[in-house]
Figure 1: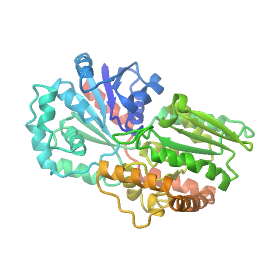
Figure 2: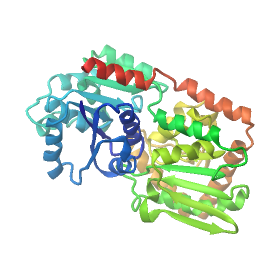
Figure 3: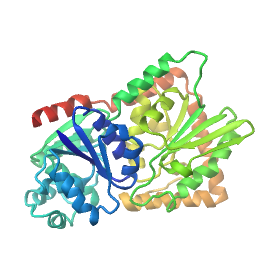
Figure 4: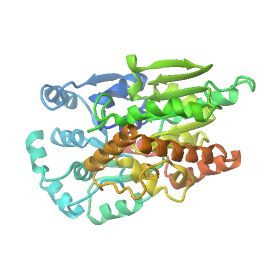
Length: 423
């Protein structure tokens, strides 16, 4: 079976889930198509695919090429890329929508109204179909894609069960399947095995792993709206000054690809900035005793499934406050750093774009205003101190707590069932 695969071009989360799903399908021809940060991640993890096509102009010249790829495919797998689902429906190709943020999408129209629009969708062309859904917000178009897809695979998270019940009540025709973590299970297994096989005297490569994630999305970029990255650059020397125990630090993520990567030495200490593939990163997650992560679900799943409890970094975009808020009461959720520590009473807009825009503004203020930066440094140090002084038992308990909260049916068995049913 030839499977065309794509992911929402928004950070590393969707693309990392797509790579994890693709690795579950080694008996099929897996062809990636996409652009931007999703394509960068796919190229860095090229062994997960049998072919990679990067679209430089997906709305214009790339559209005809994408339509040809659809014509020559038996099935489509989309991770939160609503347009790819819509194109698949117009092309009469069976499509599976995979969603790791199902409870996050905000609705202004009722699900019944979205369902009605999907039921009356014209299928003469992608442009006509997209115009039909033009009144929907970007979040609502993803919810519409759930109604349009033949199968939906939904990653568990607090609030997901309630939304699945709402979809059932709205009489969606497609089958919806709940799963546990959508992560690279083979890579996690290899990382665990490698850690256990290490000689006792070998030790980890680093004392601290700082995982920034993909960073780039509909607003954030490496060279624009990038005050968060500049804030991290200002803070790392102060981190080393405040915590002499960290002598070898790995800072990883999309912003450090190619010429943006670097190694700095100072006073016998080293900081490496790198963009690693998933299977280069997972062994470091397994071995490194301490880690700070942008609070995305994929990185959180990977850490906890390796028995590690990370510390959440301050929020980059609107999905991060959502994650922390919904994990309140867990050790991870309660320990995570947040910009409200720096600006007490901070209220962010409940909107993806304006909420992210507000976080960009906050990061910029903290970067440029010395009194706010001093508060950022001191309050973050308070979080770090609490994290570092957790006992080994508390860390194991915190990781196990998250595994319980986020558990669900095996993604491998769910995907296998779908493809078996497809024949």
